Amino acid sequence: MKHLFRYTILLMWAASTCAETLKVYNWRDYIDRQMIEAFSRETGIAVDYREYDAATELEAALDRNEAFDVVVPSHFQMAKLIRNQQLQRIDRSQLSQIDAVDIMLTGALASFENAHEYAVPYLWSSVGLVYDRAQVPTLVGGTPDSWRFVFDDKLLAQTRSCGNAWIDGPSEVFSVYSNYLGKHLNRLSPRRIGKMAEQLSSMRQHINTVSNERYLPQLIEGELCLSIAWSGHARFAASQRPTLGFVVPSEGGVIALDSWAIPANAPNPKLAHRFIDFMLTPNAAIRNSLATYFYNPLSAQAIESQLPEGAAAVVMPNDRERSRVYMVEQLSSRQAAALEEGWATAVYGDRDAPSP
Image (cartoon, rainbow, N blue to C red):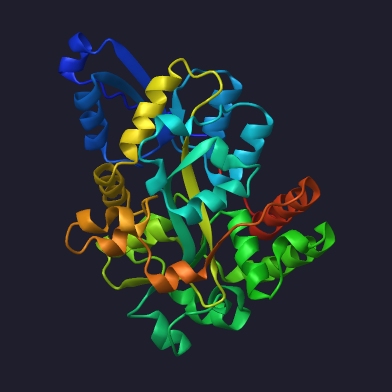
């Protein structure tokens, strides 16, 4: 596991004038830093801002009872954190902007142990396909608008020469694969999930990369031409390599959602609510979205009058993409164990697993 990267924002003036300090723990490069400074200027609250690279780093910090006021768990962590009583309930009365949050995202959170009571949507993305428009259509004879382009041996063989990739996201990949097969992942037995893993294993020979750290720079450098991707990563890569396009396939794609949450042992929950409320203002939500290329959490009606020209495509999905996305399914412990075991076998097998 990479060493914890610590980035502390304490404005020069804040050191002498701010009586209170808020501790925030977020994913690396996942905010507009100027919005943190703006929050400090507006409230007089200094922000001790730190970053992590993997979900396990956040879980380890909470397991150690390290004191943070605000953290950013991903959707797949919510049920565990709630069951372990590591988060406290959000006091909606302290959030003046809460009604502007997209109801689709609130509903998505609710499917995880009523997580909408413990977290507030921050940034989200869909999972789809990113592809090189100058290469892939010529190789496969059309635009890759179906998951079969990354789950069919014959099609994968045609694009392997220019580079194929899957994200290292077991839940996301199994979900879209089962959906492509016309099945609901949460209705499959552990044995059936194992059979799906065997099918994925047979395709693995055509996949050049399964790494969340490597696939993005490889897309930008032209080492990959087709990949499963989170939309935020895909849109950032396309900003650096204009021949890249992104599509949520016709069979549908899952939502990946990160949320603001307040740990159970937070020293300053009142300040945490002020920070979350500030980040829900249209200006902050739009700025964070533009800085990260991930979608903002507010409804279109809440932000449309404040969108900079040309920003809509980055800040929110179009109607077609929105109509195709769904929340990844909640699995039983036996299903989840079968999925994780199947993924490890399918993706790594005799290969070296990624370094922790």
